[in-house]
Length: 130
Image 1 (spheres, one colour):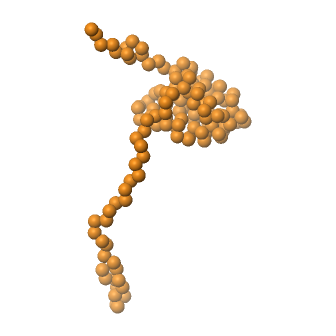
Image 2 (cartoon, one colour):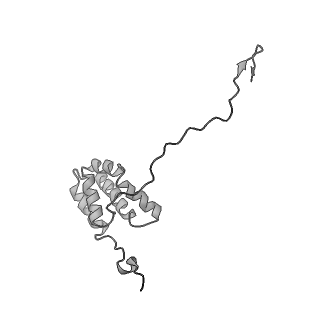
Image 3 (cartoon, one colour):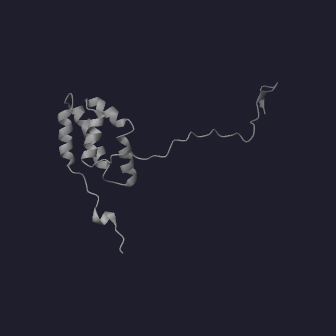
């Protein structure tokens, strides 16, 4: 019996829509159209593209853009719901539906002193001795 390799039978498909169409759609949903709002939409669309191209590290960083609060900030600037943008990214296959998995944050422990520092005391002649 042969082993079934799922990626050969069902390869991962790329995005369903070109990024120019998404950029046009987002620009049409902007609350107040201006040059600045077009710039913010371009930043969001670049995050869409970076989720599918580039190195694995870049793709992971751009996926986290959609879930760590940066998208919320940019979407609020132009009057679009961040959940709407995430939904568009997911339905057009630019973004995976689940947030990226990250290692839990571990608070670093303070370093222990190995030896006590000598204290300085002023001498009678104006110098400092240890």
